[in-house]
Length: 385
Image 1 (tube, rainbow, N blue to C red):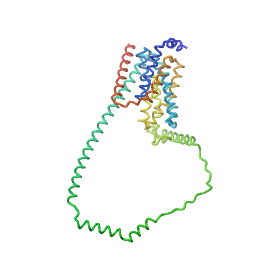
Image 2: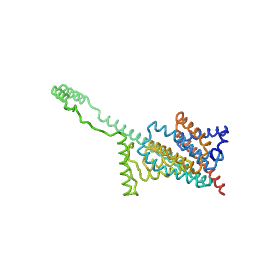
Image 3: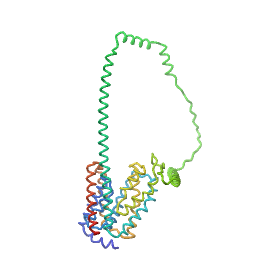
Image 4: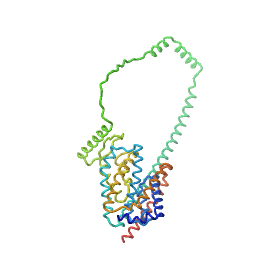
């Protein structure tokens, strides 16, 4: 009721609703183009542009992610990109982390503390992203130099071999007598009737095998595909669980349906709660932790990790939203316009534009995020003092 009373003026404030819609479109564009979660942009925009306290901003961001996650999961389901043999266990294990993170965010009580935590998280993520981009540049330059040196060496070796072949060709020019002898012997071989007979015999030698087909085969009953899918997945998780109980200090892999290579389930599966906890605490989706966790530790291909992460975020964000509504409130008058705008912006970016892969633009974006994080850190420290 409090959220409704607070939000009534916003509904009639057409200008504010318009700007919230614009902010949502920018959030959706950035999230789709740069491959980041919308909460990284939503929370700083609300705190710095609209003077919303951080606790309320993280709650609004949680509501906005409900829109974006629903839109993304719907698209991935239509494209059949989600591997349920791994997504379902991750959803079950990771969802409690979102609930706990939302409770901690509300119980902190002081917006300045949560803002400082959010700023430190942004600094860490931005520094890591910029480091990885620069490391990629270094590796590319190193590989380019190595390829250039190998090409120069290959060209030099080819030139030496060509010169040696020219010298050898000059030393072994066949004489006229040798050439005529070679031609004569070749003609004699071809005109030999015995050779023709032998060739014809070999050409006609074909092996035939009689195949007996049973006209009344015995009927066989095969279980449905989904039963086999569930049985295979259950067997893999059961075997991995037994291995973990015997040696919990080791990494354990399992072969799951939909994956060509074994996937590391332990400790990737329990650590997935960390991503949803951060998401619930800071009003983020948690993909910035979830995707690296799946790809680096879990050995999951990136094309499989992103849909699994999005499916987990889709379920956990609704539990996070429900927790905030029960314990506190979410200002939906802010969340709905931003959420609608983010869906529109991400749809436009995915259909009309291409994902930005330029290292220079990515470095510029994450540098801007660092500047924003420093500004938020200064504001939070000033508020606590």
